[in-house]
Image (cartoon, rainbow, N blue to C red):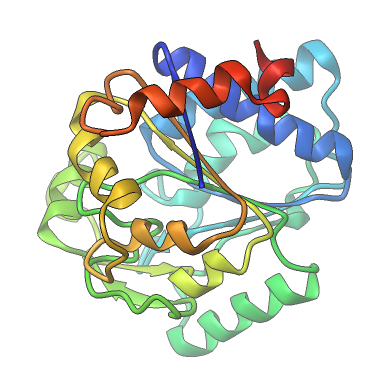
Length: 261
């Protein structure tokens, strides 16, 4: 795991977008794992800019989202399919047939989860998985006590997650209480992972995930086990990290990061 600290949320988002861009340039048929949320909106905005201004080509890219709410149709404004279309897919040259999310309306959720896992395998696995971190420490909807080898499944959402996401719905009481999520093990199968965290509200849980023990209580801590994981944070999110000087040295001195300065 490498932790990179950038001055602010904009710089952190630009760096995350550049890492994704490099993945697509190096492998035009890349399979990307995508995430949702306010933090990701800035990343997608930057990717759209790269598409428009630098001709970043998504025509051969496939995507798999981490999660979707159980019970919401794809055209529901609260669904993650709607979010992805509005924030990214409708603004780039990606084939929507190659953009996959779990079906929150599936009659048999267990079969839907198995289907989703199989589709990832059929596409050759995820090359780069973009991640945020929830205030409960989750990645995807892998709430506390999610097994570190878990696979895609339906999961009940914690009160912390509900409180964090409910304001995004016109009527907060209408937010679903369950979601379908890639498992922690599914995420760890990705060839590389990129976690982006910004803002002071993420500082405490980020420090626990990055520098604390690996624990099913904080599913993001499992990323410590991944051989190729970058954690991009802004100064506000970095405030409780104990090794800040070291993390800054990495970006300033390691050759791999010179192209991003």
